[in-house]
Image 1 (tube, rainbow, N blue to C red):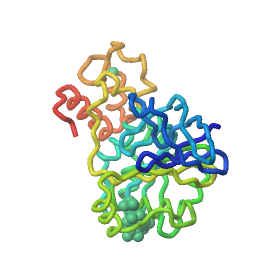
Image 2: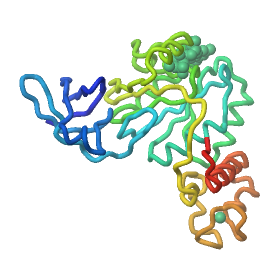
Image 3: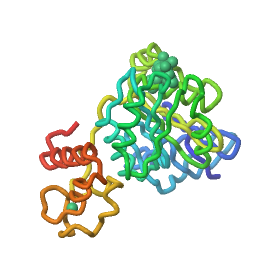
Length: 288
Ligand SMILES: Nc1nc2c(ncn2[C@@H]2O[C@H](COP(=O)(O)OP(=O)(O)O)[C@@H](O)[C@H]2O)c(=O)[nH]1
Ligand SMILES: [Mg+2]
Ligand SMILES: [Zn+2]
């Protein structure tokens, strides 16, 4: 039978096959080898007396480290306008990570009940010509939730962003039931109780949602500096139009990206973030 791993706890994997969930062990070869099962994996299992064994792990589309989940196709990157304050640097890091893993993105700006128009305009301006979708939400009052729901079908969607922005509130609104604990206290408890948090796929609207722990920093150190330019969608239009094909859009003459920057077509904050990241990757001192 073929199914998907929705949860893993203490050596057991819970594999959903159509409407049924089977508790499975992994075959020995997976425990010894490099490849061990991950939540999100599509697997082939053999079942005997209701007990399953994972026989095969199907090729992965991608593999995230934090949270440990595979085959993620979509990300809701959640920030709040305030409490905690919006960080364009952290948003840009999330965007680069999603590009790297080929994950479609919806940027969710939450707590718009507390919003200043000015901030929203500046976020939109920063992301002009990137193609990223921006959704404005008031998760606590179900504003903007319906549209997100419609995009879940057939996707594994991670909900990521800093702690306290409203990810759990949003997931509960989307699911229409309490699938996640919300509020500061639960976050503190979670951190205290389980240092190793397991991820879990929650089935909603014909797709799966995954919660992630709140990040206050992200590591981009593993990215090849020569590939970084491919992770900025607003540069795509200029592929092959710089004077040098190896142009990393930094100090080279005849750079089409820099021209677009000067013309205001590419946003300066995004470009500066790109150069800053490029420089950090070039020196590679544990870039955090
Ligand atoms: N004002 C306002 N508060 C919100 C909204 N969404 C969530 N919150 C509050 O923000 C706090 C953190 O929410 P939570 O979902 O636990 O955030 P998480 O850490 O990202 O999972 C809670 O007190 C929520 O009630 C919103 O749209 N507006
Ligand atoms: Mg939470
Ligand atoms: Zn260039």
